[in-house]
Image 1: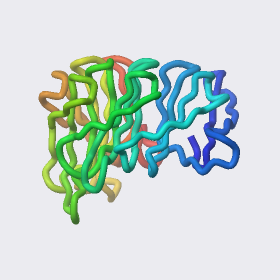
Image 2 (image 1 turned 90 degrees about the vertical axis):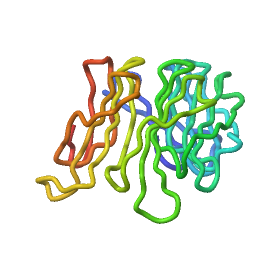
Image 3 (image 1 turned 180 degrees about the vertical axis):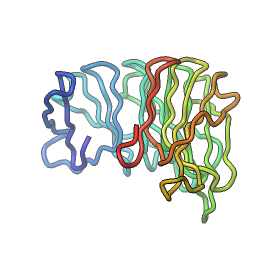
Length: 239
């Protein structure tokens, strides 16, 4: 995804890429996140104005929908072609999640406990999801947190909260209902001279989170294919 309304797509496993327009010609969309249910159905979110775009033909055409109640959108995910979520900020200092159960035709904004904004979200199925946020109210130091839902995002509970400026949390991913990871950075120097990277892990659905690995550089994206295989990436090409 690129700014100014463009999507870069591949149909051959990444061997070649083509640029598609997102939205009508001359649009000012700046897509910030993308979620795909299958090769034809997907959604984009504009970070700043609550606009979303949906496609049912692999990106050849896009239809715009306004997500009311969301001020900023930072992340997106879907569990199937009907259930989609966008995470970010509902209003000043208030995190939130917008949920759709009709493929993005209509959206409902839900409150999330805490302050600040959400930066990452992951759903396993239409009911079970996790999100990562920064309690960035006022001035630093700040705390970061992990929240979870078991009812599709209507209600959220806090599972984990850092100490002030203890670490910065990045992306969250789950392999199944028990095994998940969050990548981030520790607020302590490593042998690289900068902050160290960290991976938090859970094997009980988020009831407890433990530091599983520390890296010499900060880590932010993380993904998995199952409970045994996961990848995280960070600064200077670290994977």
